[in-house]
Length: 125
Image (cartoon, rainbow, N blue to C red; front, side, top):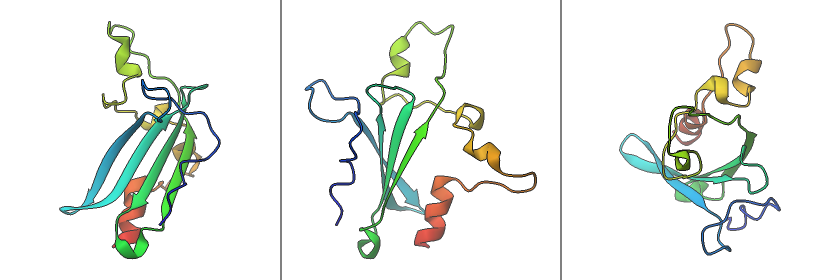
Protein backbone atom coordinates (compact mmCIF):
# COMPACT_ATOMS: atom_id res chain seq x y z
CA UNK A 1 0.00 0.00 0.00
CA UNK A 2 1.57 3.33 -1.04
CA UNK A 3 2.18 5.68 1.86
CA UNK A 4 4.89 7.99 0.56
CA UNK A 5 3.11 9.45 -2.46
CA UNK A 6 2.90 12.84 -0.71
CA UNK A 7 6.68 13.07 -0.26
CA UNK A 8 7.29 14.70 -3.62
CA UNK A 9 9.86 17.37 -2.73
CA UNK A 10 7.50 20.32 -3.27
CA UNK A 11 6.84 22.92 -0.59
CA UNK A 12 3.13 22.79 0.41
CA UNK A 13 1.16 25.09 2.71
CA UNK A 14 1.36 23.93 6.31
CA UNK A 15 -1.22 23.79 9.08
CA UNK A 16 -0.94 26.19 12.00
CA UNK A 17 1.39 23.72 13.75
CA UNK A 18 3.94 24.47 11.02
CA UNK A 19 4.84 20.85 10.29
CA UNK A 20 1.81 19.06 8.80
CA UNK A 21 0.64 19.82 5.25
CA UNK A 22 -2.68 21.64 5.08
CA UNK A 23 -4.84 19.35 2.96
CA UNK A 24 -8.52 19.21 2.17
CA UNK A 25 -9.88 15.66 2.19
CA UNK A 26 -12.84 14.46 0.14
CA UNK A 27 -14.48 11.13 -0.60
CA UNK A 28 -15.84 10.56 -4.10
CA UNK A 29 -18.73 8.15 -4.49
CA UNK A 30 -19.69 5.94 -7.37
CA UNK A 31 -23.32 5.14 -6.82
CA UNK A 32 -23.73 5.04 -3.05
CA UNK A 33 -20.23 3.75 -2.18
CA UNK A 34 -17.09 5.73 -1.34
CA UNK A 35 -14.64 4.70 -4.05
CA UNK A 36 -11.90 7.35 -4.08
CA UNK A 37 -10.13 9.45 -1.43
CA UNK A 38 -9.05 12.85 -2.73
CA UNK A 39 -6.46 15.08 -1.06
CA UNK A 40 -5.96 18.72 -2.15
CA UNK A 41 -2.91 20.83 -1.27
CA UNK A 42 -1.72 24.30 -2.35
CA UNK A 43 1.86 25.38 -2.94
CA UNK A 44 3.62 27.37 -0.23
CA UNK A 45 5.79 29.35 -2.64
CA UNK A 46 3.19 29.58 -5.41
CA UNK A 47 -0.47 29.57 -4.28
CA UNK A 48 -1.69 28.83 -7.81
CA UNK A 49 0.23 25.52 -7.89
CA UNK A 50 -1.97 22.71 -6.57
CA UNK A 51 -1.72 18.99 -6.02
CA UNK A 52 -4.60 16.56 -6.12
CA UNK A 53 -4.07 12.97 -4.98
CA UNK A 54 -6.69 10.40 -5.93
CA UNK A 55 -6.46 7.13 -4.00
CA UNK A 56 -8.64 4.20 -5.04
CA UNK A 57 -10.36 2.52 -2.09
CA UNK A 58 -11.00 -0.87 -3.70
CA UNK A 59 -8.74 -3.34 -1.83
CA UNK A 60 -7.54 -4.91 -5.09
CA UNK A 61 -6.63 -1.45 -6.49
CA UNK A 62 -5.47 0.40 -3.35
CA UNK A 63 -1.89 0.46 -4.64
CA UNK A 64 -3.03 2.91 -7.35
CA UNK A 65 -2.66 6.60 -6.52
CA UNK A 66 -2.94 9.29 -9.18
CA UNK A 67 -1.06 12.45 -8.23
CA UNK A 68 -2.16 15.42 -10.34
CA UNK A 69 -0.11 18.64 -10.33
CA UNK A 70 -1.51 21.72 -11.99
CA UNK A 71 -1.14 25.46 -12.24
CA UNK A 72 -4.36 27.40 -11.79
CA UNK A 73 -5.21 31.02 -12.33
CA UNK A 74 -6.23 32.96 -9.25
CA UNK A 75 -9.92 33.61 -8.84
CA UNK A 76 -10.61 37.21 -7.87
CA UNK A 77 -13.69 38.08 -5.86
CA UNK A 78 -13.46 41.84 -6.30
CA UNK A 79 -16.56 42.79 -4.32
CA UNK A 80 -16.16 40.21 -1.56
CA UNK A 81 -14.78 41.65 1.68
CA UNK A 82 -13.68 38.33 3.21
CA UNK A 83 -10.39 37.44 1.51
CA UNK A 84 -10.08 34.28 3.63
CA UNK A 85 -12.39 32.60 1.11
CA UNK A 86 -9.44 32.38 -1.27
CA UNK A 87 -7.06 30.83 1.25
CA UNK A 88 -9.40 28.70 3.38
CA UNK A 89 -9.42 25.21 1.87
CA UNK A 90 -12.57 24.28 3.78
CA UNK A 91 -14.54 26.79 1.68
CA UNK A 92 -15.44 25.17 -1.65
CA UNK A 93 -14.92 27.33 -4.72
CA UNK A 94 -16.26 26.39 -8.11
CA UNK A 95 -13.53 26.95 -10.67
CA UNK A 96 -14.75 26.68 -14.23
CA UNK A 97 -12.70 25.51 -17.21
CA UNK A 98 -11.73 29.03 -18.22
CA UNK A 99 -9.91 29.41 -14.88
CA UNK A 100 -8.15 26.06 -15.18
CA UNK A 101 -4.70 25.54 -16.66
CA UNK A 102 -6.08 25.35 -20.18
CA UNK A 103 -5.60 21.62 -20.56
CA UNK A 104 -9.27 21.14 -21.41
CA UNK A 105 -8.89 23.63 -24.26
CA UNK A 106 -6.19 21.58 -26.02
CA UNK A 107 -8.72 19.20 -27.55
CA UNK A 108 -9.84 19.77 -31.11
CA UNK A 109 -13.42 20.62 -31.94
CA UNK A 110 -15.71 17.62 -31.54
CA UNK A 111 -13.49 15.99 -28.92
CA UNK A 112 -14.01 16.42 -25.22
CA UNK A 113 -11.80 15.83 -22.23
CA UNK A 114 -12.74 13.32 -19.58
CA UNK A 115 -13.05 14.70 -16.08
CA UNK A 116 -11.00 13.11 -13.30
CA UNK A 117 -14.07 11.50 -11.76
CA UNK A 118 -15.24 10.10 -15.10
CA UNK A 119 -11.82 8.55 -15.72
CA UNK A 120 -11.87 6.87 -12.31
CA UNK A 121 -15.42 5.66 -12.81
CA UNK A 122 -14.27 3.92 -15.97
CA UNK A 123 -11.24 2.53 -14.14
CA UNK A 124 -13.16 1.04 -11.21
CA UNK A 125 -16.39 -0.11 -12.84
